[in-house]
Amino acid sequence: MSIADELQPVGKARAELSEKLAAIDKEIKDHLADEPIPGDRYAQRMIRFLADARDRIDALNDRRIMTESTYNETLRYFNEDPTTPSNVFFGIFKTFLTSYKVRIYKRTRQAADDCFG
Image (cartoon, rainbow, N blue to C red; front, side):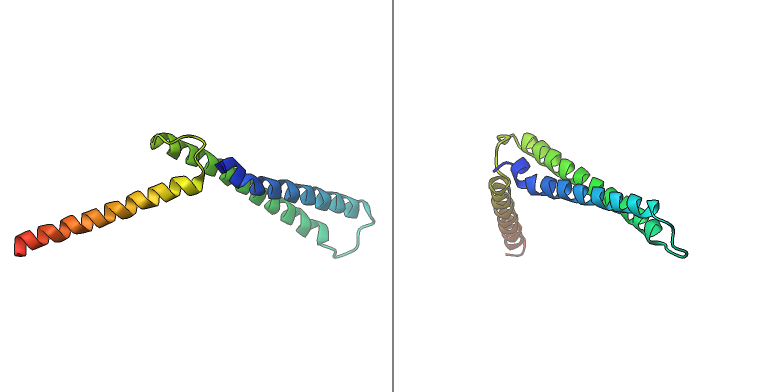
C-alpha cells in the first residue's frame, strides 16, 4: 500500500468535514436572514467557530501533503523504490538502526575491554 493510499482516509475525512462546514455556513446565513433576537450571539460565535474549523482543516490537509512529500523525499534519499509501502520501509529502517546500535555497543564494549582489560 502506498503512502498516498495510507493517507487517503485523511483526505476523505477532510472532504466530509468541509461538507459539514458548508452546511453550518448555510445555517448561519439562514439564521442571519431571520429577524434578529436581542442578545443573540449565536451567529457571531458560529462565524468564529467556522473560521477556526476551516483553518484546522486546511492545516490538516497541509500536513497530509507534507507527510506524503516528506516520505517520498525520504525514499529518494535512501534510493528506495517509490512504491515501497511505509511499513516495509520503516521495517527496513528499524532493522538497520537496531543493528547499528548493537554494533556500536559491541565496539564500545570491546574498546573498553581493550583499554581496561
